[in-house]
Image 1 (tube, helix red, strand yellow):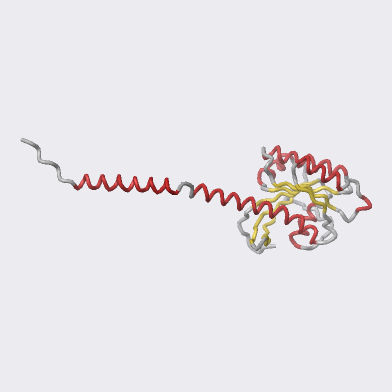
Image 2 (image 1 turned 45 degrees about the vertical axis):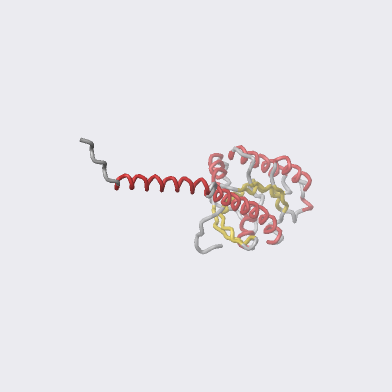
Length: 219
């Protein structure tokens, strides 16, 4: 992780039921190390920079607290630009909760134009699977979000590949917004030039009028 804070271009929120491995997934991505079912004792926000397509993306990623505080979840949803909603493939209840969380995100933001990923964790525990890949994909399609299955316990690469897809989409969207802003800023340059030319002409005319001698009054 960075030793100093770089201003974030995007903000990611990781949500999910208790013990689905969302904190382990977050720490695995940030540090490349797996430290078991890491449970955050408080809400943590990490500042991190990754390289995507030869460009750096600096973002804040927040591991949401698990205290059942609905008002805090609402604040987190308003804070974030993109969302990773995690469930365990060995726990059907966590899957149903993840679906509700995705719906809460769309409701909280008031728009469907969001970067949301439904992430099934613990893929290494296939023999304990309770949620099929087909169920996960189907739910994601109906919700209109991305879908991934990973294992934070297996290796770093599968987590990185999945999350990089989300980060890349956010990065491209941010770039698009910047370009659109720049276009609006520089839109209709001819009109701006005409306005400037008219303004200069008016200014010169007023100055000429001031310098012109008054006509002698007729006796």
